Length: 96
Image 1 (cartoon, helix red, strand yellow):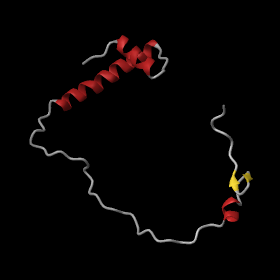
Image 2 (cartoon, rainbow, N blue to C red):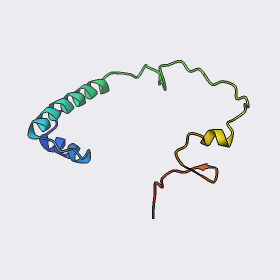
Image 3 (cartoon, one colour):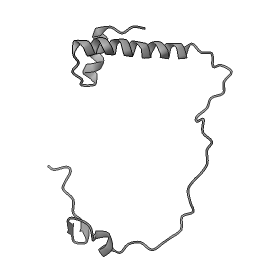
Image 4 (cartoon, one colour):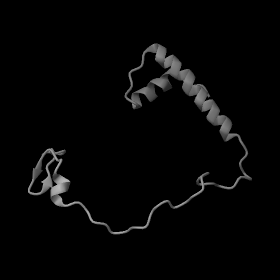
């Protein structure tokens, strides 16, 4: 399944990429090869293969939740560059 240069240009536009003519030709080749390989995979008969959500064995690696003493407010704020009223002071992300 070969892509056209126009299709590569459309994909580049969606990805907000500016490509040279050489890059367009290169990516047309590479993307076409990827799609050809995906088509080969689609033709493989998998009817007798059970569905698998993962190939790794599942094991819970979490430890028991045990209460422990936490840091005091003074210690937690001791390395902060700015604090205010006992809290971390950070620059506003959203402003009106």
